[in-house]
Amino acid sequence: MKRPLSPAMQIELSQLRDLTTRVGSDPSLTQASTGNSSAKLDGEFWIKRSGQWMSAAMREEIFIRLDLAEVTDCLRLGLDPAAFFDGASLETAMHAAMPHRAVIHVHSVNTIAWAVRADGLSQIQARLTGLRWQWIPYLPSGLPLARGIERAGRRRPDTDLFVLANHGLVVGGKDVQEVEALLTEVHRRLHISPRVAPPADHANLRAIAANSNWKLPDDDEIHALATDPLSQRIVSRGILYPCQAIFSGSPGSEAFRPVPRGMHREYGDRPFLLIDGCGVVVNRTASPAAIAMLAGLARVVRRIGASAPTRYLTDEEVAGVSPEVADRYRELAHAGSAPADGSRMHESWR
Image (cartoon, rainbow, N blue to C red; front, side, top):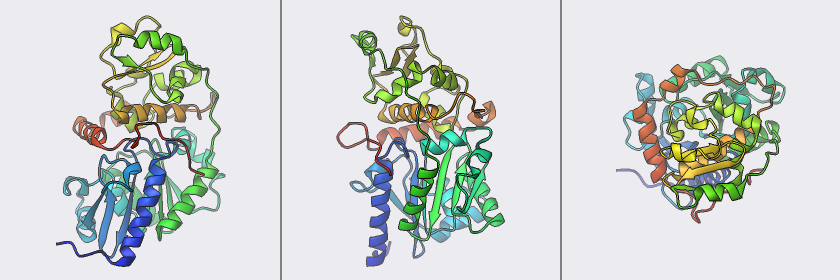
């Protein structure tokens, strides 16, 4: 039986839920069910459940309550906690490997725009000067990433910030307030102004969607994937990060290659279509999570310059996202809570 929460724990969990909600409601930091947060409190380990949307933290019970000793025992034995605790986040091992009391992991579009560059480490070194941070070369989520965090932590035990190549950002602190302050500072330092994309051809897109299984996405930024030539070129050449593969319904980059106007009828089984120079239509069966992924991808690639050396995931790394894990992740994300009013969330982080 779980013991009652002390008043101090209730306050800390309330602070964690508040920060989680605000971060999860900002599409520049989190898209759909990506990202997670955790707290280690009096021998207990609280972490966002797999597939839950961070934006729902104040209105739903999205956290799972685990025994911290049992979770760390899994790591010590080389076992992935996510496989042993029903509902635990796929990133439970990574959070447990962090010694910090509070941890937050986000898919910041600014960070990812740097983290998918072959020269990303050298590019951000000056921007993060003075902070206790490390760069983690790409590792699959779960136990491999947790082991990478542990190795880095042994080299520099005072590290509070990890930039994950082709993935995102992890921030740790002694409490929620410290985590928020560091996240805010990193978000400011890694800011990139996005390119202005040509507008979508809404008339043409509405004609394509009429009496069909297609619809226009609510988020206009998605159209940049098809109207901005550089964005189009970047996404058509490969997979930048795992969630792009998981939510695209395609193991490779085929789904991100634009189709000529008038050819949309030949691709009716896809979750979305990039209509060359026109914009994007999404399948009416596409989940809110898949559409949020597209919006996040559009925000990332508009922050990658024409001369940036892009580091795509290798075929082996893409294949390393097992079909079983991807299917389960999609299933959980689709069942999670989208914005309560059904509208897209707005960038609010400052």
